Image (cartoon, rainbow, N blue to C red):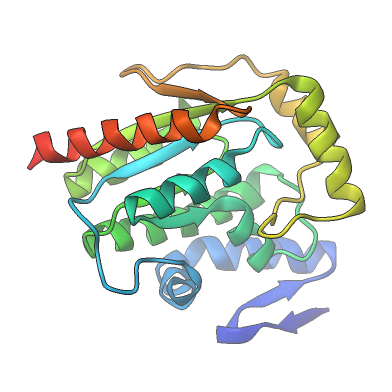
Length: 226
């Protein structure tokens, strides 16, 4: 059985339906991107400054979304989050490869559309492997904009505490369904650092100061690129 969603999207609730839904989404990523564009926050007065793609890296529960929201507000950037899109498309996220492919196909189309509108974009997803970063790298290259990788790291005990709290009470703006099992699975994969380098912040008491330094570096790169 499937339930109709706003904009003609469907959220299937059984195995066969989810498989068909996943194929359908992957095949219609451009149409989905157009439908979902209105749900992505972007500055109401139009693009702010030269466009750039700031793509986050980090494990579930590390504070990527919190960091992305601060950075997007500081830079006047659109905030595109894989967890928000996944929750919008799927009733019960599995994080299985076919589901990931559908989510990230839509995500890439959304990001490219925003960059072509000349927005700055903060892309909020795990991006832990080199293979997982190929699409954003290609998108930035096609659009001719700087790409800045930003890794968010956090104390493991604090991360596990946040994941535990998520099961009891979801924080505002938290769209992730990732739990400790998914965290452990992703943590078991060796981190593959971007070949071209990346910035790093620690989710802790000095996070705001660290993100301000990142914002200044992004603005300097944008100025140099233009």
